[in-house]
Image: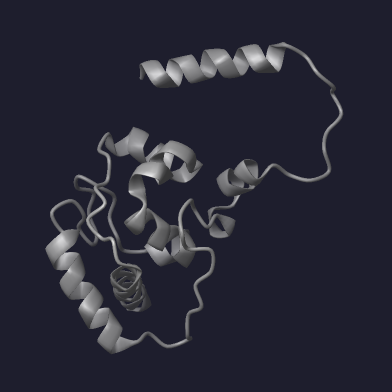
Length: 149
């Protein structure tokens, strides 16, 4: 709360300090991330994820096992818990953002506007339990399977 208040005060001071009133024709990447979550790829090692049209059921099964071991203590499929519900995540976020959040949650909550808002809402820092990109990709495939039903 104090950090939010300080951010508002500092931000207001910077805006009030003047500068040109002309607007730039190119949008700030952060404002794009805030205004359109489906363009936000997050902060982390994943820059692009190529997905097939069909869900890979074998990979999704591995992802379900990993989710149950590493994620289900804080996330439920359809209800708010320690963290947000998972169902619908692939319709609200890019694949890159999802994997970056799984692999890099601490940096995401420091630098990514969506992750910052989630931290403010849930008041719990997600723990980096998945270090391997292939495991994070399997969890994403499980999320895709959930959202295809």
